[in-house]
Length: 206
Image (tube, rainbow, N blue to C red; front, side, top):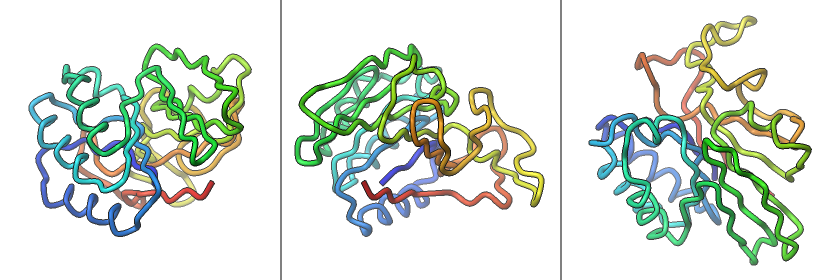
């Protein structure tokens, strides 16, 4: 399961619905690709929701996680409580899946390759980072950040996109770093509006 960009601002009912849906789908593990919150005051409640996920959750930070000033130690504690981990410029081996799971932060220190596994899954926030991996290839790259533009006009696409998206607005693409899936996120930023761009939880079959 892949989710991204919750941008939690106190809507506990919505967050509980998200967590309930994830748990009902019973994924083997869950990946999060950044922007849990925008303000540090919302971090404790948002991390409590992460703890309620009944599968291991692995996450990487987004730009708002950094600018919020929230403690990444608190993120690490919450994600590890699920059996997962917080992966800022780190990787972890999931031997049961023959998989190395890599989390990229804003510094982009992504030079990981563990010979014990045959497959590598990269978590990034900015989709454009998939083209800036110094020739490295991954079996799958998961990203967020774009929100799909939040407002999409038929036959036109997104009216406005944040920096760092490039040509990867949403969905599955082939990037320089490998297959890239861009999740349009669960929350909103700037304006609490979505049109023709519904919130998304993505089920990935490896």
